[in-house]
Image 1 (cartoon, rainbow, N blue to C red):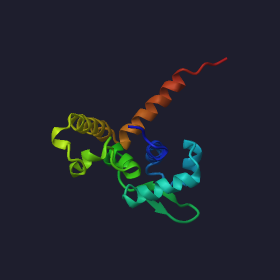
Image 2 (image 1 turned 135 degrees about the vertical axis):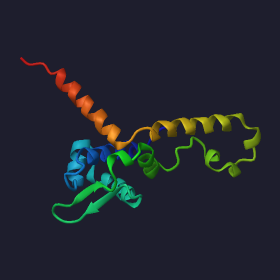
Image 3 (image 1 turned 90 degrees about the vertical axis):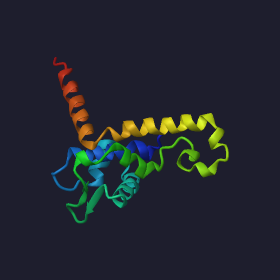
Image 4 (image 1 turned 135 degrees about the horizontal axis):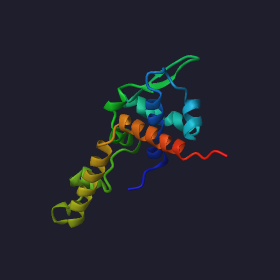
Length: 148
């Protein structure tokens, strides 16, 4: 499975919101600058996330986006599926009626296992987990700084 740019950018944008959780709305401009994502592209992603109830927007000069739920309540699987759709490697896993070979097809069983494994990984990670991972990475970078 190969994620599209939306599938790579949406978790980064959501992580940015989680890192700023409780500090008020975050502008697309600031998210885009920190995450190196164009504002225009980010806007499309945020609209999808808002429609799914994962983020909320605030209008006005101090407006922007914020998480609609606690970071511990948002799983990576939700974010990915909003912007990517199904994570099935093949369509017949989601709808076995699409293929008349499902009952005799060995690869169908493999694709089902693959989808299950991917979902298990994505379901096991919340935004809160990602925040902890990010902070740990940042602290390791500070520990490696060299002073001259």
